[in-house]
Amino acid sequence: MNAALPYGRALLGAGLILAVAGALRWATPDYLDADVAPRFMGVLLGAIVVFYANVIPKSLTSLARLRCAPEREQAARRFAGWSLVLGGLGYMLAALFAPLASMHLIGGSLLGLSLLAAILRCAGPARA
Image (cartoon, rainbow, N blue to C red):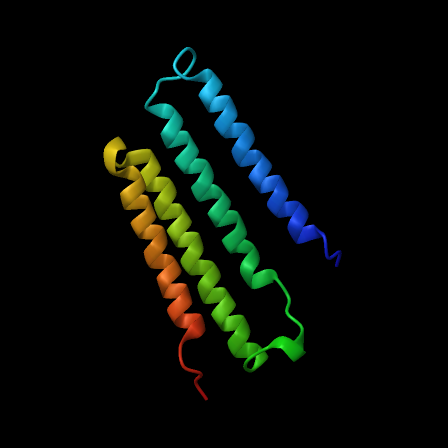
């Protein structure tokens, strides 16, 4: 696997965020309602979280770098991936349906809880 591939993906994601933010800024308020732009941006950010969370269980780590048995490491990665996918979906739903004034707070809270669950699961005590 090419070592530069993850960096290229991250740069592509950052470029996508910047391009969409610029397009939304340009389109608001002439072509787009001012309430739609932040909702669309929230959906995009949630979708990017879902995309990257989906990659977590699929990334391979050298056996020498593992802190525990490979099965437990993969189980922790799957849990983190699912947790963050659900958090990203929660962020997207909050961006779509929550009141505009509190959509970032609600979405961020849902995403933060999923991240906390993933951290606690992955950094928790090793089970035999």
